[in-house]
Image (cartoon, rainbow, N blue to C red; front, side, top):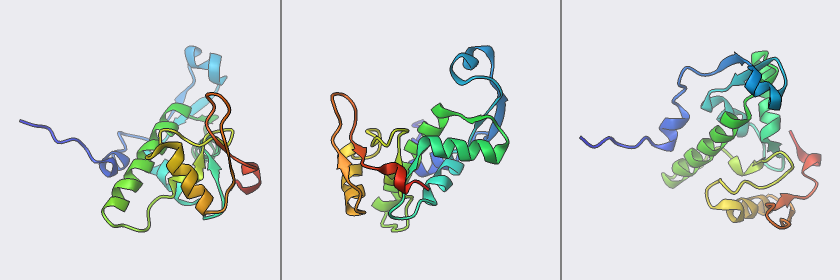
Length: 157
């Protein structure tokens, strides 16, 4: 029997018993300090990305901070939040491919230092084009560093 692969939309709505707040253990504390970590549900990350209006931006770290506050945790998990941003982006493109117009504006979600996300559909070129269409200025990356949005801090939500 051939098992059908889940669509990105299905992955977005598969909560896998999340969100969950966990204690930061010894191994994790070297990187993240002490306290608790919220592992968000994918749909929560999508909701945070959906709430960024045209002309404004958000970073994955800001989303993590917001989720940590919401769940009373010390931090939001950087690994799962990044993965779920990618799933939200791919689900949005899947929806757009089906003719839906009100999709999650994932291109407004940047990496921590204002960098574009090479893992989004179409890579940094597609994200740059969408951001430029919304009147953001893109500065080229240096060396292996990806392009960044100039003065992104001024338009963060």
